[in-house]
Length: 290
Length: 163
Image: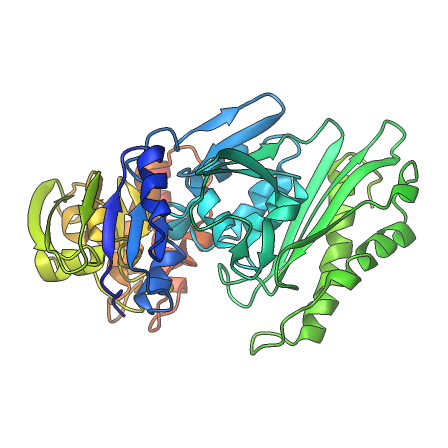
């Protein structure tokens, strides 16, 4: 349970970091390390080089940009959780982040690291999709912004190229009248999600649906999400509407079958949790109390 | 830009319990091994070595963290506090007594980590809501179970309210 030997590099600027990444020698970027170091310890990861982000300035901030919150690559999960808890419309995010590991790992694990790691059952990639967020990625040709729905390709694989690095993630602030909810089932507290579901819904003054995103993790190779079908806009949330919306996730489901849960159980849980989550999100938006 | 080679031993200076320790180690050395094998502070225990059991939990800049999930070389500017450091604090005796009186430990393997986590919330969280069960979920105890530990925490909170 010790890592293999690796070169350790401590760049002082983003330019130096890109310079080292450009060498292309099986390097891994170390941010908080709460996913990477276990993989190193178990020797599932055997990088030739580890590049630590801790000396690079400007990656520590949580900035309010008006329309959204920009979270630097080295912001730890617990700090972001405290920053958003109690903020209007961010219920799913603050509740969802309570499900990431334990307080003892959230104190060290970073928001951007979890997203770049792209574990299909982890909470932050799902939440970034449901909040319609994006990742800002820096590479040899400069900065680019990738929407969360385009970012994740396969388990542990994203659009981020080996010579690139995530410098921040952006979390749009939900508009007025938005409610959100998050639910998760796991075998043990803090363990990987069997299924996690998140939803945000916006309603108008007449309690009619205006907008919404529903997503799930742990049930496919990447987090999945669907928009509120356009023909439901202007309707109130009935049971039929909720069920139809949840079933629109079905074509995207490809749940794993493992010792923790069968794929059938995971499908069942998506539907059950999905319904509860949609109803809860609408309730928080100020809709019908049920 | 600092660059250390694979098999190079590098000088790492860590502040542990307020005292600097300088040791020549490989970049791949874990903080838990630095604390135990290099410095000799064996109160920090090593269980699973992949972040699940919580036995190796120490305080890094006052926040509980897994010492098996940090590279020693990567911790350099931060302050590490182990159970040996907590034992010198004036408030430690009442934590020890609460654990002892409530049978909150049996073999003691998990205790150093649990005390570090509990300490972090007793010290810095005045007025903030603490989800104690969530905090304990980050630690595995295989002898007494968690009821005694929960009782010890309840006693500590009671004392705090009386003060």
